[in-house]
Length: 188
Image 1 (cartoon, helix red, strand yellow):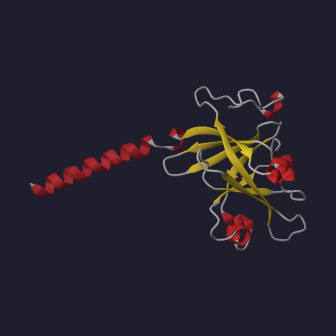
Image 2 (tube, one colour):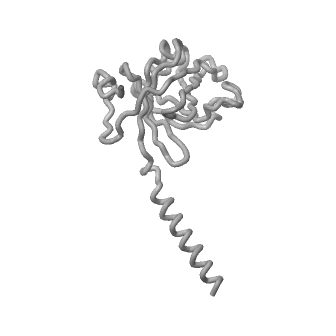
Image 3 (tube, rainbow, N blue to C red):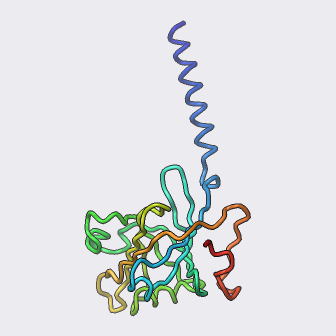
């Protein structure tokens, strides 16, 4: 009797965990949008104000898109393994202890190629390494570019940002780059 009670309790627990796991699918991840201001002159010159659209999950975050808050440029981002950077990966480029470990390729569609040229002149491909996006912590983004001559990938810039604001998530509809401006609705 005692063994069957424990078996029933274990079955109930596993059932509850399965339901919870199914309820927490990628579809249920909250999409959030944070805007950041440049924290230094280099970041202001290279990137300006940027807005990041990302999916916030229970344990991790996936950055989906980067947008110029003041301009007309945006690019989709795709998560990639650091092996895409070649031998030594991120450790070779930014050091083993750097907190920016979430790596994304800048997709060339839309204005992606323009962002690559702006962030990493001379490169045709670029990757962005992020730390955690947070309202309470500054954000550093490591910009990594390819060497069109076939050499190893290189660190192009280290961009530093301060949190500006979060777009309202209810009815979120960000203006597109083709709309002429990304400023309407910009959080103040």
